[in-house]
Image (tube, rainbow over all chains, first blue to last red; front, top):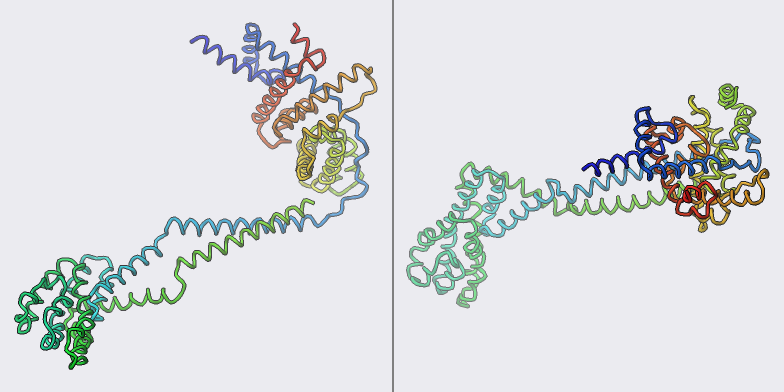
Length: 334
Length: 198
């Protein structure tokens, strides 16, 4: 323990040797150092060596000047101040460009709110747009507007979807009825309702003709209310029906059988509009407004592209500024 | 310091070239020797000294009292660093290389005998080489303190730092110089060898 303390003391004394030589220690410190020197040969040696070093440096002779450095004439103010001002300006511009680039890069990589989320939302809207009953134009807008946050909105959206789903069979009915007379019901059920109707038409093909709407409505409604994800098959089926139906149709009536479903699909927008609750109407109008935004974004350059170009532009600008600054600096010093 | 230094400075600030040249005559040896120790080349030191005095004349308005010598030596040190930077841009320029090439800026002395003169020059060469191994701040502190005899306060003014920092730089610089010289003690004159022999 004492040895450790002695070693620490020794180290501190060694650091003070230089100041001791210059008389920069207080009387107390000097006395303590001299007390240590009396006991420590290593420190005495070091002090002597340090003293010899300082003495050698002090005795270094000053060289005579090779000539007089008196100024023959007052130095003419050169263009240096202007060059310096230019260099300063360039330095400032370089710093500003570097800062701007850093801000853009940080904003880009940190993912500031806006671009990513909005894009995600519009993508989600588009997915629902394709997934929701495509025959109608109104129904898809529900989900788009429905992505506007609140639970109430989601319920309203579910309502719209439910209404659309319940209506689907009524729209489908003429199609099926139209085609069902000449075509076999099984293909219609297979294409038209897919998994939603779950084989009802194929097991009871004769029942489908008299009561197609109630049967499908009951099957479709729970599916629509359970999860919106289950709507697509039915909805897609509706869209697929006109295309899928013709092969099953008899050759004599191709156009009348094919046309009804599209007609029904075209009618659909007007029907839901009349039956929509005030809340859903709001959704629809809101949906219209929101729907324009992604369209506008698709028209012009996206935010990501703008940021990329900004980064590239700033990077090139910064590089150019750096080069010109270093050139100006060199010229200023030369 | 000149007796009428303040008035010479005041006249120089009014762009009196004769007054400024009187200051040049007074301090040129110190300025030149500082440049010589920092650059280890007589030619480069000459350039740096001239640059330092030109810069001093241009900037004399910025001198607002204190030690004129410290102010002037600061300008000289900066001129030397500028010269060093210029040398580094050229292929054959480093302080060590310059030391080796120019024999450590030897200073002839007419008073000493041939043997003593040879020993002195050898010691000077070792000191110069040792100084070249120090960090720039430590080198400047050691030269200004031990070669030019500036006070710690003047050093703090010249180096624009606290007296505590000056103390630290001097202590470290000297410690490194001691290690450098002790590693070559057999080549050094008597004071160094005697310590070893005792």
